[in-house]
Image (tube, rainbow, N blue to C red; front, side):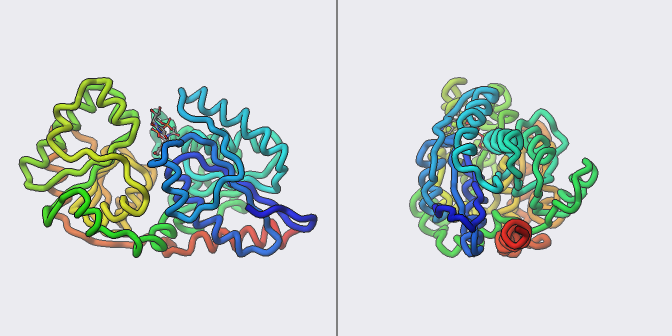
Amino acid sequence: MSSPDQRSRSLLHVVGTRPNFVKAAPVIEALAGVEGLAQSLVHTGQHYDDVLSGSFFDELGLPDPDVNLGVGSGSHAVQTAEVMVRVEQVFEDVAPDRVFVYGDVNSTAAAALTAVKLHLPVAHVEAGLRSGDRSMPEEINRLVTDRIADVHFTTERDANENLAREGVDPAGIHFVGNVMIDALDRLRPAADSAAVRRRFALGEDRYIAVTLHRPRNVDDPDRLSSLLEALGHVQVAHDVRVVFPMHPRTAERVERFGLEEPAGAFTVIDPLGYLDFVGLMDGAAAVVTDSGGIQEETTVLGVPCLTVRPDTERPVTVREGTNRLFDGEPAGLADAVAERVSAGRDASRPELWDGRAAERIAGVVRDDLVGGR
Ligand code: UD1
């Protein structure tokens, strides 16, 4: 991206999955304005399909990665270990002054762990979120990353409290706001929900947009089958169409478990690029999801959201936003969706979700890393 000269400081970003790309794009852009700072970008290759990776780089205006580690899919141990082995070499070659990691995916924890062992300071963007549910791989990734990171950029005050409780040095915690909302604010005008509606022949129909990909919801055949059945019921009973851009993980499980039949009750489409998905959310009567970032995006868009999980690491979206948790039996899903649809739109902006989080991060970097030499 930009090569370090003798006077400049260098910073290396590691990304690997769809949500990482969304978060890194505004940060890289804001840091490009910091004088004396060279940046490089490493893609671990955890996500590799164009629908989950390439199209995001194009639409978000991310620079091409300087290196793609080509790690791909695998068990948690394999994927984490592959990222560590391959990124170690890059860290040694580039010798950055700081490594930036994002969110809570396997690539995040693997890169952070590798960096600290090489004595490279780590900055974690979206630090401090806690669901309290250690059965989720993301919760473990968050705990590990925050424990070893030097600088913590947080999106909500609960995250600061979590970090303080865990003994993290307050001097390294910066409440900056939400970079995912920076990306949303920047690109929402380019997201055309009418075009998405036409493309999927939705006419004037009300519809709900669904994304489900968490192991807890999709890896157990009985649970996945009941959830799909319940979604089919939503369409029939509540006169609202169901549109489901299906994550490859979920599609693979549907096929493996032989569940094509119930899925035929609604519209299953391939995963969408960033702009199309924002358009789909923006035009929806409600969103049903188990994603993290979507809970935040729907809050700012004002679209009612039902999160199919017993807990959330993003409590501000429930307290102040449009998000509600659904922890009941799948059979109760249709009624919960109907309640969300009837709630109507109500946009809100939690503190510092103002589209300027990346700018604040750039300010910290300017003071700490470049100015502080
Ligand atoms: C990962 C993250 C999850 C995040 C999600 C965003 C972890 C532990 N999980 O989940 O937190 O919400 O990304 O999408 O890091 N696959 C493809 N093409 C790809 C990538 C994956 O088909 O480009 C399929 C493969 O069958 C693969 C499966 O999806 O085995 C799971 O991929 P993986 O990266 O392990 O986790 P995700 O479920 O995508």
